[in-house]
Image (cartoon, rainbow over all chains, first blue to last red; front, side, top):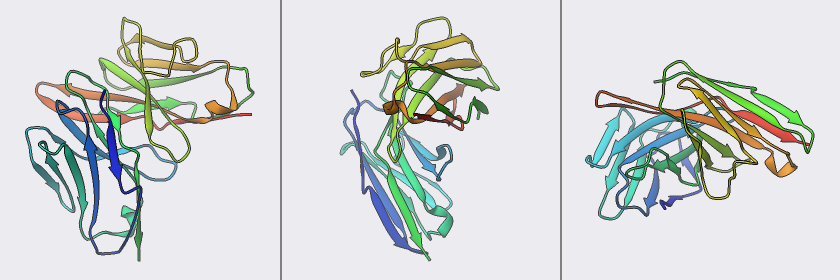
Length: 112
Length: 117
């Protein structure tokens, strides 16, 4: 079955700098890749997603890139702000399935 | 996207007892998903619940321990049976909205924080 690896497990950046989180997946037929932000004590919130027929998607300060050949996708946050501090999870949906398989999570800390 | 109401939000239970968690969705959805999130960990899928059929359980999870009901397209329950301290975790339900070529993403309930003592 699908396996998703996420790196790094923790990331600390200065406010205003960029943050990049990377995920690799094992099932080349996976076709949907969302990213979730989870603040302490809150539910995961979808922040951006990408389908397998698209290489890049951007939404204001957040972007996701997908490399199907290498089977990896990345989350890019530019001009980071203190409110970006949270745990971020990537996920992949195997083709033919409805479920999501999640990465291990990245705790992002933005230092003022 | 769908709005999910999950309850209870938290509970402290005695070992050996059972707790039933409810999720109500404001739209009809084909599938509902139940996840477990242990402290400081990622989300692990317990099972997928389809209306009108038995739930599909992931490896490591069994129906006797986590029975699921799905009586209609807007409601599901997960029961954590014969609880032990190892069951202390956050349990979340999730749904996906898709239709007419549009994908609205997966939405999560607010979670149930379970502590077993």
